[in-house]
Length: 357
View (cartoon, rainbow, N blue to C red):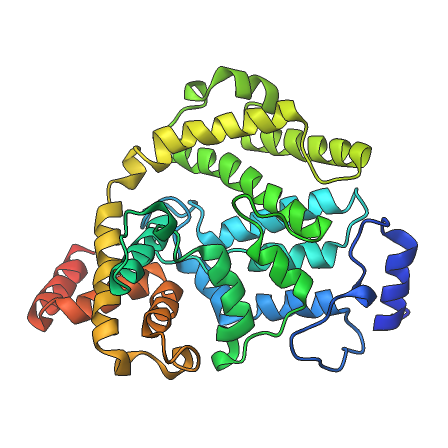
């Protein structure tokens, strides 16, 4: 059995990867230079740092779509992240791209998500705007807190007690540019951006069907005919389409037909699940809870853990947002109860729960 050194792995990348791939030995480097690992490439090190971070572990208890689902098989933010990584690698490998870089970006892309999904992001944007004396209804102020920017902030500044993970610039760029109209500098980052959309469109449908909120027959007929009649069929169709189209044109893209079908399915979900469906019934409560937590800690900054007070001392709203956004759903709920509910009520509620069980 042969053991490969980092240098040998880097040489093998040049033998087997496409010329459009990001090669480890050509990385733009890290904010703080450090000695290379003897066995792992820089992108392998980044993947491992993300995987072993506290922020990554917390994703297991953060909402994907459904708040506090009762069933065991609904997706959390962590499961979504792992599915994005799998889809991304399924695209990267046949295109000859760097799978280690692709996986690192995919694993880190949602580290900055708030508790309770995107509603927490909206609540923190509102809270920060109000604190700064800005109009929270102005569209440009509604994304003051953006989860993709927060993900980059976590890996650059917040992890490891304020030292950050010191990741390569390619990984941080891919994390920051995975959503919206942003486009990553590497083909690997661009793959993750598309894979993220594929994952949440297909798997959110799956969870909605499991919850009885949608049926397969209720989905728009045109996109179904093109993409398939199950999550696995839809993923396979879109992955194959990306690989074929990207190989032909030399850029990461879907065909116009499949892209349009995916976006039509996405629009359907926004209209029938994300914005107006029964899955969103509890969202106003989650929104108010995040606002309450922000208001409390902005008035009691000494109660923020020290690791969140390392940076931005002149901007306490950022420190509070860092702390609150890092909470899991259950920790945010428990903290709110401890701050706002009288102890006797909490004890009574706990006894009721025990008796109920």
